Image (cartoon, rainbow, N blue to C red):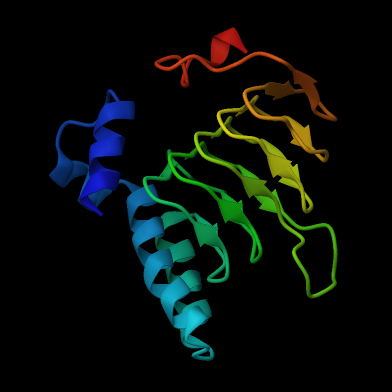
Length: 179
């Protein structure tokens, strides 16, 4: 949990203290609640994981299904309207902005949500749909709709998303004006 607070302090210039991040940032609360719900889900405890997920959504505006796998130090910035589906996998050091959807495209009981590898940044309002993979250190532009795999170290923009082989340089992850 403390690594997550350090990550928020590093990437959010508005963060004044770890206490502020811990108590007032909805993304931190949503991830913390998800960790509890996911553990109960893994233990196959009925009802309670979904109840925790629903309560978290009510308080944070961020919906994370208890079955989703969330890596370490994942930032959900602002978060309102963010939805992460049951079979989604979110890697370490991923940044999701408000209104992001990691949605499914099938009603079958199989892997139907996206996988985001390490270091992916997803802009506000982006929709990533289906059992696809967004390669490590890639960026998804705001309001893009991604329905195909994205190779590592690329940028994807538009509707439908078009891949631009443009690596994200360390320290420029948040410079959306350069996408």
